[in-house]
Amino acid sequence: MICCKECLDLLSDYLDGELEPKTCASLEEHFQDCPPCIAFLNTFKTSTDICRGTLNQVEIPEIVQAKLKEFITENTRKKG
Image (cartoon, rainbow, N blue to C red):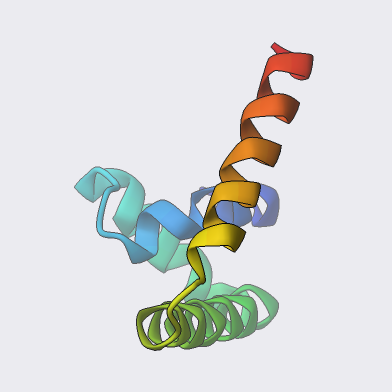
């Protein structure tokens, strides 16, 4: 049986359909017995859908894209 923490760790893969069938079934069984996790799942799914929809509608200016890439590159090197 999956606990709440494991449930949260698997949520993104679950929504993307990337879990093995056995893990998926265990997660769905957990959802049946855990209203807080199903509420979190619904909120997470809605938030993800809104973000994906918004990102597809908004064009990021090239200068912002360049600065963001620069920031990520610099901060990735510092940590790695």
